[in-house]
Image (tube, rainbow, N blue to C red; front, side, top):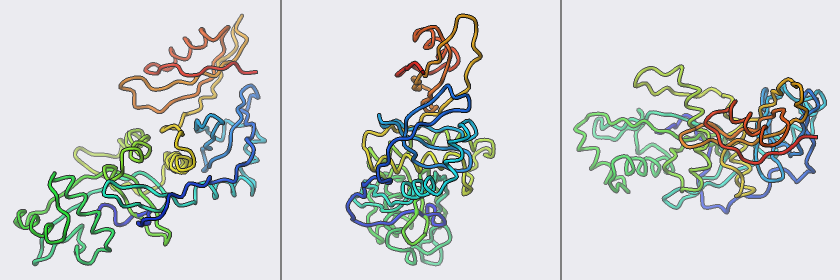
Length: 319
């Protein structure tokens, strides 16, 4: 069924697991290679290329590790950094579904899957597996998926059988988009976005368009590829999911930290950090950019010129 191969979630009625993933360490001061740019932030997690940081105002930012100063890069190789990463991203979370159930597990990645239903030899098959042989949680998810896609209530196995009979032996295929979750036993399972309640769905869907655009170069016309390999958006999604359960005010998207400083020109002496949010129709994530300018207004104009389609958020002068 919708991603039986990948399922990262436990289904149950547990209470929300919301203790902070890291036992609140003091924020660290992070610096770029130039030493000009620095921010005070907690480490959330990292992979080979990217580190995710959280400021005191709950904003999350993603930075390329190669742009950090040597001391910060060395810190990410320490046992302490690894323990923080594991403590944050390996804790289970509770996600609520529209049918009232809670999925307990860890968000791992985005997913785009095919689901095919067909009646064969008097039995209902789901992606070549008999419906009756599926675990109860998969059966319930299938009923919810068919109900949503067909816009009719199909809540029992008998109702599913009756609906499948109307297909007259023809396969019914759905193209589904969602996230991959991991159960405590290590099994992986993909959950369509529409099955989550509104607030949880908004958090999880935040970076999906960017993930989909990233994979667009491997998609043929009308093709729905089976993405299973890790990608650079994975650490961002995992960090969003983890911090969301600690603090409900966390931003729904992670700002990309652009530390490409302009060359200093005559009369331009001060570096400024400008926060940019995507404007209407812009599906890109927020950005923190650093520019040199005489004052905040000039810095704002420079940031907008270099990043069309964004609107200005907070701005600060760097020491």
